[in-house]
Image 1 (cartoon, rainbow, N blue to C red):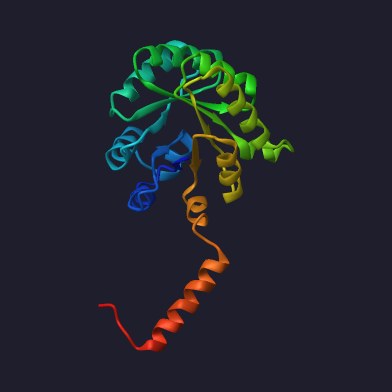
Image 2: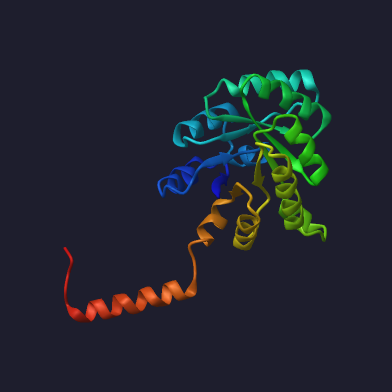
Length: 217
């Protein structure tokens, strides 16, 4: 499974990218607003830090303007994935950009039917929002299972990019279902490292080592 980081905080991205665990970045207007910086400058800087796909979102809602925005965003760097909403205009934009060889991330997916449409429109990634479905009493992982099955049935190249992840278990469940990508808030990625038995075992090893009075260096 590939890990993308869901943030526009360049310091967080640099820090986590240094671990070798980051395969890409997703951003959206809300995340960029939190950074307080110019959107295009932030995206360009992120593209210089991460080799993998960097999702940059269009903000127009009509096809003509969305396509213009998408083409402008795609010129920032070769690893840009233009992010469009799962609307008729968004899918039309997806088709046009995909035909031009541009990576496209179709976002705000909440049903398997929507995911099927995105794959047929040539999406590179489909972003189902599992946490938001959980919030309204549905099981977001049921959606991931459905999409993975449908894509396998028809050998679609579109990758399932699990979004709106809230907990490490979202990541584990998505991986078990065969989703190709998880986009994680930095805090959730760091949670994946943690386990009390790891901490306990390390403390015991260090205590025993200290008692030997030795040094490796």
